[in-house]
Image (cartoon, rainbow, N blue to C red; front, side):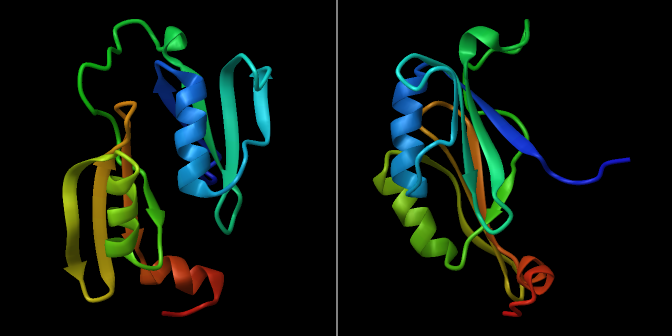
Length: 137
């Protein structure tokens, strides 16, 4: 039934500020903006080895009853080569620590933060991810 990850979407109160923050973090420009990059309500970045989509959507479109009083939601982990370095970079950019780098088992390390807009962002070093890419660890 579930065939694969397509897009993760984060609700943000200030889309232009979120675009700039994620542009700095990711080192890429968004490839899509609606209605325009100058006055965006929705913006998407393509990132990573599979060009996964990260969408930023104006909080006005949040489903009824889903407030954002504090960081919440599912944790989506993005593979990184060095969790500690990536974690420190996120904190430098203004993310808040939720869980510091934690060894889960041999080769597996995770951490997660809240971005400045209240969304949870997970990072992980995953030997499985590298195996799927054929890069080993």
